[in-house]
Each structure stands twice: as structure tokens, then as C-alpha cells.
Length: 598
Image (cartoon, rainbow, N blue to C red; front, top):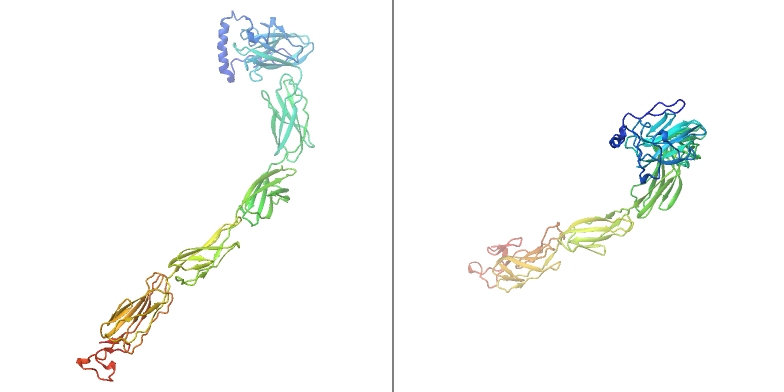
């Protein structure tokens, strides 16, 4: 917004032809209020009402330029609170803007002055400033700091000027601080800088003397051995007091200074902050190989340092479980501590990289859990052909850890003092175990075998010569495993219990059986009696059968003929002749195998 001004003075601003987009809605409301206010004014003339009690702390000016009151300040480097409350004038009636309150000032010397209006009440109301002399507009402004007005004007010695504070629209009224300054601000304070990767973060505090208000800050950078340049400028309302400066060279020392500017000019530079050396950022990470170490076994600790996307150089201090390994050299960005052994537990890890002339230092930390060591159990194979109540088997097993091994058994066997006892028939499962300890994992090995029934032998003595009609004969036999023996017979005799009864002449067969329990093979022996014949035992000498088979032990007597008593009648009632061989006789003959036939 510009307007024509007097020659030799700063270019003035003209009022806007319409509200700016950023404030359209608010100013539209203000215009409606202005319409109401103007309705009660007569021919748009000045109407001055009594000042509200809330604004008595602010100084009102004159109603027009002709009645302007002197500025209530000792010089043009001061400030005071002004108000246009109660002023109802339209734009162009007494000045450029609306509701203008007027003050006058005549400088003794020519001076360039900065004038700023800062709203007080209501906060943020849209104020304006304008300067006139001899009926001519010198300059004016709306919205320099947000909705606050500010301007700079050259005042000539001995010339009287009218300074007016008004509002953008008819409803714009309030109080504001009018600040005057003929100087630049003092230098910023407490400048600080911290290096980054090819950059630096610079911050500072506001000047002690704002000189009416700082409009911008400038950061000045000087590389070692180079010239000072402006590396950052910050504006705003108010301008920021920190910045991130980029484009620096890593490894080069920099000096930083800051200036503060108002509309008159920049301040002197601040005190410098020196020896700021940008460096590339680095990262330090730790790992172990293997990733999960085990007790008593060596492992390595690796420290990886990277910067600028590549491996860093230099040395690293590594701390493992409180033990410091200083100055471990980085090779291709990795430092390694080898051959570390620890018991079960958590081991803390830490590493510190001091950095280099161009790389910033970094550190890393972590921990690794050491697990129990594994082990294996070697269990010697059990022998084949195991049978009930057979010879105990001495069990043999060992653990790779060297720790003692114990045995347990289930099924058809038990373990006593490291020996396998064959206590039944069927599957037998034997487990060799090592329970482990604080540093070792448990382990075991298992075998399963079948325990067969044991074999046995039945001893059956020879039967005496049997004569038909004689009394019962008591049979005697025994089992090699002590089991009870039973008897059976066929032919010319019968057995009741252990008693053999003769019922006629001819061949007979007698069987003896030993058995009756699942753990034993049943014994069975056959026998017969006869004249002049001797019992022959047939024995099965195989002590052990195939697993799961129940094989009886058998002892059988040969069949013999029962000889009749001497008074017996021969063939057709005729007694046999003396001396005739029995095997020549037609009846009661005995075969050569000892089995009689009729």
C-alpha cells in the first residue's frame, strides 16, 4: 500500500482499496461496526467522547492534525501508550486511516526515526501509523508486525510533523505502545554453537536494547583461515533466535557471530563463539559370535563403527563384563575382542569410539546371555537274547561333559547298582541320563529290548519193569528251574497226580510236564515201562528260545510192553514155551524202537 510523499522523505504508503485475504472476515465485522458508528456522526465530522475508565492509562491525542498534542516523550528513543478509543472518524477525513488520534513533534536535528505501534488492548487489534507535515502525507503503514504497524521516516530539523495512530477499519480502536528509536539494536547476547555433520546449531538471546524492535537476525560464519560470510538470516514477528547452519566442511574450525537488525539497520556483531568443528556423525553397535554363547566355550565380541555411510577408522575401547580392552583397532570399521569365555549368566557389553578429526565420537552398549553348554550321552548297546532272570547286564554309558551318568528302567527290567535285572517278560526300556548342572544342559539316551521267557530242563528218572496187576507206581521228576512237574500217560496205564496205574498189557506212554508260569517254557517228558527196558530221556538242550515264544522243555520215555504175570495164560490158553524170544511171539510183540504192538 503506497502513497505519494514529500520529496527527500521515505516513500509513504496509501490505504488499501479493500481488506487483505488474511483478515477479510474480521475486518468485514469491523466495517459493520464502523457503519453504525458513522451513522451517529454528523457529516463524518470528528466526535470525541469521554475516554473509558479502562483506557485512562493510555494517552489520547488530538481529534485532527490541527489539534494534535505534543508527543509525551523526552526524545525519539522512548515509548508511551497511546489510545484512539472514543475517536470516530472515517478514512480520508483527517488522515489516511480511520479513527486517528494525533500527536506532534518538531526535531531539533535532522534524524531518521523508527516508529512502531504494538497493540495493548484489545490484543492484536489492527492499528495503523501515518506521518504528515504542512498538510502533506510523508508516509504511512498498516501491518508490519502481524497487524501492528511500523514505519521509518527521515525527520528534518525544525520541521513540525503530525504523527497519527488509527485503525484499518471503522471499528478498529484500542490502545498501543508507540516506540521510537533513532538507533540500531545492541548486539545479541549469549551466542552458542554446537557442531553437527557438515553443520552447526547456533542459538542466542535477544539484545539488551531492542531499539524499537528487532526485525531480523543474521548469523555470520568464518571458517579457519577464511573470510566471514552471512550463513543465515532469520525474520518473523518476532524473528527466531536459533538456526541450523548447513553447508559447512567437516574437520574445519568455524567462528560464529550474530547481528540484530531493526528498520534502521543492523547492530554490531555479538561476541564470537569459536572452535566449532563440524564432524560426520558415527554409530557404534556391538554383537557377539556366536550370537548366544554357551558356558565355557569361547566367543568373540565385535564392535562396528560407521560414519557417512561407510566404515570409520581409529580405535575403540571395549568393556566386557567389567573388563576394559582399550585401544582395539578398527579394521574395515570393525574392532574384535576374541576368545572370551564366561559362565552362565548375563554379560554387559559397552564400547566407546573417540572419533577422529572429521568423525564425531559415539558409544554403544548392550548385553549377552551366556547359556548352559550342551552335552551328549553315549549308551553302549544292550546284548541280544535277554531272558527272564538271566545274568544281569552291566550297563555302560558316558557323558561328553564328563559328569556321572545314572540309569533307570521300566517294563520287564529294573536297575540295581548299575546292572540291568531281567525281572519280567516283554519290552524293557533303559534310559541313561545326565542331569546337567549350573553350567551344563541335561541329556539322555534310551534303548528298548525284549526280554524272552527263560528255558528249563525236566529230569525224569527211568521207569522200573512194570507187571500187570501190580500196584501203582509213584512217578518222580523235577524242573531245572524248580517249577512243579505234572504227568500224563497213554496206552495201558493212566496217571493220577504222580501215581501210575497199570490197566492191561501192551505199550504205554508216560509224559511229564513242567510249567505253568509265563516266565518259563513248559517242560514235557514222555516215558513207558516194560520188561528189560531202560528209560531213555530226550532232552532239549536249547536254553533260550526266540523272543516272545513259549517253548516247553520235554522229556519223553520210550514205550514198553507190559509183561503178564507168570501165572498168565498164553495163546489160546496155552502157556508159552520156555526160551522162546518175546519178539517172536505173535501177541504182545515189541518193535525194535521199543514200542510194543499187538
